[in-house]
Amino acid sequence: MKIIADTHAHTLVSGHAYSTIREMAAAAAEKGMQALALTEHAPEMPGTCGLYYFQNLEVIPREMSGIRMLFGAELNIMDTEGRVDLPEKVIKGLDIAVASIHLPCFGDGHTKDEVTKAYVETMKKGYITIIGHPDDGRYPVDYEVLVKTAKETHTLLELNNSSLRPGCFRKGARENMLAMLDLCRQYDVSVTTGSDAHVDADSGNFCYVQELLDFCAFPEELVVTTDLKKLEPFLNCTL
Image 1 (cartoon, rainbow, N blue to C red):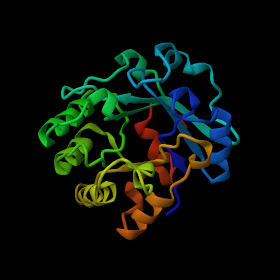
Image 2: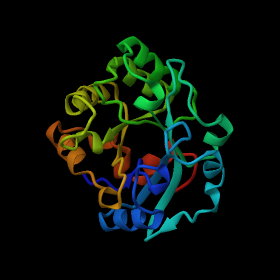
Image 3: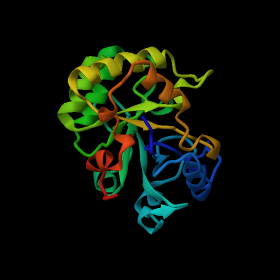
Image 4: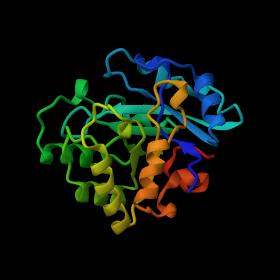
């Protein structure tokens, strides 16, 4: 299968990333992407941009380097109640909304039940597009509950290329993704692909995700980033 969209990437305004919007777009286009989502870290992540950045995204052109640009946020899941760090009204105005667990915002030492509850409550909000990198073994999750809830709430689960990178700080990502994909196949649940690029060299890079999908022979019809028509129903915009 051929991946043609990247639904999770960052520019230098996220604070610990290093490339501009146009640099990210050009790099994604060179890798054959047809769409790129720039999902900057939401305000509670140390060093990132503030609320006004996300309120002003409509001024940015939606086509660069010949590809469709999407602008959104990677929200921080703050607690087990699924609280996130942008107002509902702002999130609903974004093209795309990823919600993820990050150590500086969620903390550590949580049980599997607590982490699972955090994801479930986040998905129940109804305006979250994607659960980002639910593969990190530092935050154990009941994958069957996660997958079933994703189906019920029309939420995409992410295959994060950065999580599979050698030396990545996330734990057990490959094994966790394979477990999640097996359940997605069983329950007919769609997934998306995010590079989680923090520099232009990784924009649209899915070398590790592609290998994983090939390894487990995952059905192409359940990967929404192989066809923009499959991705569009999950977005707050048209493609």
